[in-house]
Amino acid sequence: TADGIWMAFNPGWDTPEGKMEGVSRMRRRWSTATVDKAGNLNTVVLKATVPDPDEGQVIAGMALWYQGSTVPGHGDAPEADLAKAMDLDALYPGDASAHKYLGQVNKSLTGQRVEAVKEAASQSPPAVLVLDLCAVDPAFQRRGIASKLVQWGLDEATRRGGLEAVTEGSTTGRTVYSRLGFKQEGPEIEYHVDDEFKDRVLPSTVFMRTGRPRTSTA
Picture: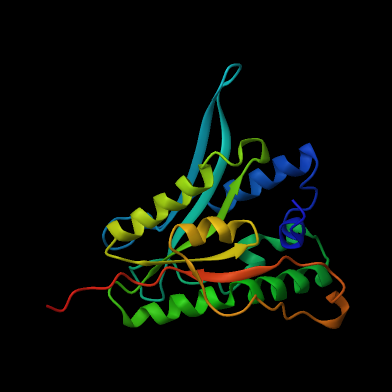
């Protein structure tokens, strides 16, 4: 991938060692999950597998959905401390510049998502379902795997009381998301970073949401 954000959060992503460390970080971060008042997991990691003649099954893709809410008991609140959540000290030990850059990029990328979570506090249920990550191995793309990972979350949002689903879409991902009912809100996301980081290449990304299902008043 040429996604500058992904590469920054996953140093060494293109090496076997870097990939393994990335997997380990994800496991550590999402090894536990809270539940809402109804007993639903607030974080769900989906794994898509396909048959393999040598290994039986191989992982072809994955998605991470989480229920976000600022109302206690209805989901996880937006992370206030990125350095702690992502363990930036372990990722870039003693590198204050890298920590600052990642914090600014993440705040820009997820700003509209955070606002959507806050807006939901006045709705019922007071939560949204967030597609935080969806990735498919290039060797298995164009097989409908991404669509199935996304559709699972949309079905789950309905099951949980008609939650709105939100995400950030790359140039590739937004095509899939649009086909499944997401709509772009606003222009492309603008990254607000200090001048020292202006020369870094960042991906074209848009905020997308499904809207809440209309309810009949008859």
